[in-house]
Image (cartoon, rainbow, N blue to C red; front, side, top):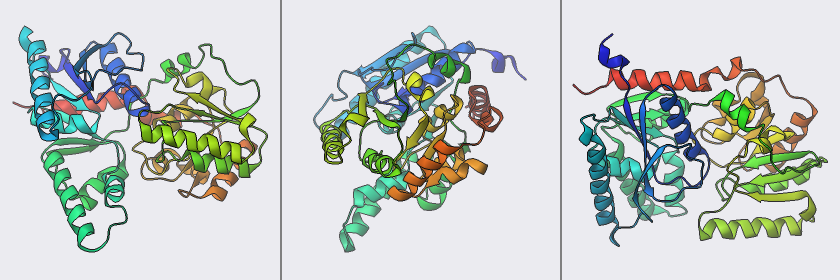
Length: 385
């Protein structure tokens, strides 16, 4: 093994912003893990929006709002030029970046336009689900044209790039359904620091006094909190329901108001708590009797893994993709079809009555050291001359 392989690496993490939930936390998990190993870590964000604790990492914002021009193509080009300039300024000390990891759609495209070398794109959200949403109810020629255009766009952005799928199902989708031909393709699950999560879960928080079920996710139709509210009510359990998560746009805010109206209509106002975005959601998750996820689609749902690490039983919709690769073996019976209120209600009751033991051995593939080691080995394997 060469001396170069033992030297600290300079690593860039690319994000749209640091507002939101799972994807942002995972990126910061990467930053923490690489820094703990002595590597030089820089976090680049398109918009200067930060809601998470950045743990003292160096954050480089390309713009305040992500908008440098009214024309979308010109705006992307200007952001790419600015990214290349910020990277060049950092590399002026004579130490180039060894590799970058892109964690968001805008940065996937911008990093390609900036021609950054050795960018690993984390394929984290289903393109097929996105494509289905964009096509909507269109039929005939309009459907064919829209589908063709989006597939061509995906292929322009992702073909010939280094891609790391975060689930096996997503790897198969990328190759078989989308027809993308990457420069390299690997499957690496997201990294989790078990010890740090458990320490954060011990921090003080103003939690409900009565037993409760929790779901932590950005408020939105894809997360389908309405399904969970209806299933929880149908389950008829004595536990309250806590929904952690905020909104980031008008559409999500409208959905939140819809949920609050639904709770009122169902007559359960006093038993459902909308707790908003929490910088540290882990005490809420650790002390919950159950974590229930109701999503229509995911990449690799961070919250499911974090809940299991904290010893909290989990039930989930069997949405594409991820839950079926997390809840395996005897845990698989706690998966329910997407959109099925009755099935989710049955699983909520069953999980509260009894749940299999949760061990670190069953979660080993999600441990930080395993995932980070895979990324470093991958970077070395495809390193440019």
